[in-house]
Length: 256
Image 1 (cartoon, helix red, strand yellow):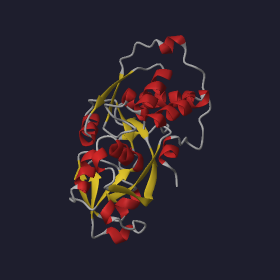
Image 2 (tube, helix red, strand yellow):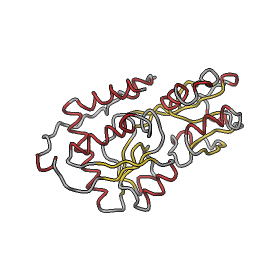
Image 3 (cartoon, helix red, strand yellow):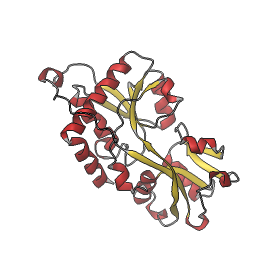
Image 4 (tube, helix red, strand yellow):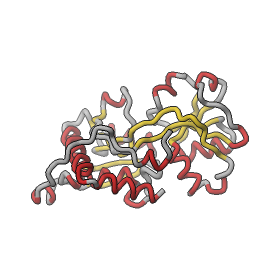
């Protein structure tokens, strides 16, 4: 089982070969900034985090490496997806892959971040979670619009949506849900920051449900999506080849 720090430092098993550094002409590209949107998903993305969080920092650095600049907006997750689908944003930072999303989203090279997704519970109501079928009598808190692990969806559990992970944990604390489905790093970060008074009241339950790579995605419907996805993959390849991606991930781990 990976630790929180190990999850953030995870790199794709198949490294992309190093590519030549962008030309001076590409570095000085005058194209309009790529319009990106993200949600509050700390420590990976967040409006109060340095650079918008490690996933935003990697996306920005990769696009810059490919000669593109980026502008960043934060929205609640369901709204971010809605605005992206109608064309208000060129891409979404911090998405999980699913069959449904692959119909409309382009998934370039992953960002090198692996999310460990599982359950948090109230400390006075811990339970075994290795058998998902045994949880069918419980209310599980989830976030509206998240692509949850296939294993979780297949269990057909009773779920109750929240606008974001912070709201989900607050519902758990209030007893409005029995468990909260959440990334382990996000849960730990929120307990260390916005929910410090409740840090001893919530616990992470082993084992996790799944480990999911984190992506920045672009539109499969709009023609520029293919160009932006190729630029991001090219930039991530450059960052991997130069060792800078590993440095960014290490820096992100220190921010947690």
